[in-house]
Image (cartoon, rainbow, N blue to C red):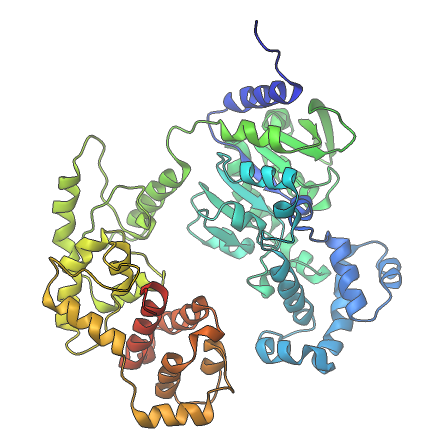
Length: 541
């Protein structure tokens, strides 16, 4: 006797059936309700109310003065907050860190909002998405969904953690002028906490945003015309969504609005419903009425279960890689001498390579044979880009140790070259720190010894003890100090690593690398990178 299916299973099958009728994968339009659900973050009103309290301003007065217009309220709050931020002792540390960014009366509030949300944006113990069993289960399913991409007006980092492999494009500027491929990507159209200046918050920001709305709508129309779109965590009357849909429907035309609506699903969390429900809904816009589907659920799990079961013809990340490679080649057809690294197209880091790809069966020996042709052309700076995750090298680490690193070491003469990442990834460092160099050239052992010893002159050590030790406690503080550049590099090596996260050292080194100045080519810089490489990957560190 067949066991009857549950309402949740029936719903999952129905959604799966509806989405499977479309040839393209669905996009998720993610709103603040999802961040409230899993991170316990405030909505827009709650966020402004919090900072009104910080600024000792009556929120009710601001709200009534702005006549309920949140961007206008944010503008007035920013003006009030500007004075407090520049004068109150409680913001002294923040002023030291961000004063260069605060160039107008809006930025102080944006900086503090970014810091506030950043500290609360991690899915970790203390958040509902980790502590509450049912929500943790939803998050686990959320991370497995098969989708084409994400659009969000949220500033926080929730979607970055749910979809860590999706490159994020922040703000209209990046989306409009970048090489976005519209496959396996995240579009944070109202900005991100990682760049306070990108936040669309105040009346002035929204006015500027709306001037470009038509261009954004043209970009988004590509998605809405080809993909199902599910709205999660929004009110059905959210003005941000209504404004975007107005512009899209204007571009589509009244005769095709119903076709557009057939691809749209508004998902509403409703604790009062006993089981998931799908019902027709008419969304009224100035340009007409969109007949979309409204989904009412008391748990997102049945919906995520449907999205997990979607079967793309090819993984979305692979499609994005292929699309981007072709785009890059067409955009920049000039042929330059570059290393050839042959890897499967979906290898980690393959999106950082220009590529020739073929279709058909292959053997690993085919890839290995072709790869060695280009490994010898890799230079020390290219190794540093890989170590700092600026531009990953997609090649077998043992092959790099045998083919690339010896050549790099010869060209670097007596210079420093990071090496422990490749030793660790090839499984050559045991738990006691002993390195297996069997089959590797002698230059590799010499490099290991040199990087582990990392000799610093006694005069520099004494100066460090006098001017830095116990005074400057992080790589960022050292780099922002008045010390000479050469001594800064020595101080990064001498600084006690137990007092900071190793990722902080990577961040400051990456800034130097990207500066393209002479500092990024100095011996001190390469020594500091080797120090980071040892701290990060050497068991003995």
